[in-house]
Image (cartoon, one colour):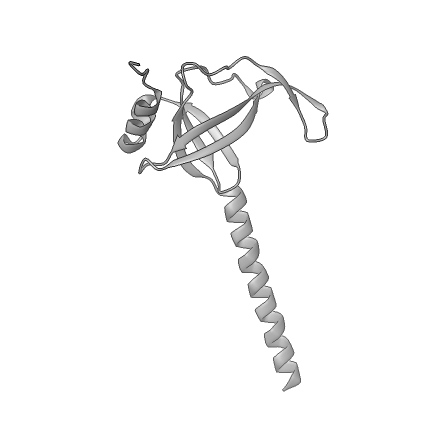
Length: 132
């Protein structure tokens, strides 16, 4: 009887750890699709990028944007793009941003017609020059 209780306790602990591990992985590394446009007044000039320890990592740019899912729901994201990884997105570029709950897991420049209509409405309404 004691062995059965121990085996059940071990299995329950393993299942619990597995569930917690999967939740952590999904929240950290599984990105969902979001869409954005680099604002026309955004500073896209490359600058020196530093690690958390202050080590120089090369040239790049930190992007901090509001992105929208296919329902038009907003999320603020921030990530660094190094110039060694390719060119930097320029002003007016439309982006597909893969973002998890915690980090940006990827991005690419896309065409306007690839953006879901609800997200595009939000992007355009927030990037139109005001008349004031």
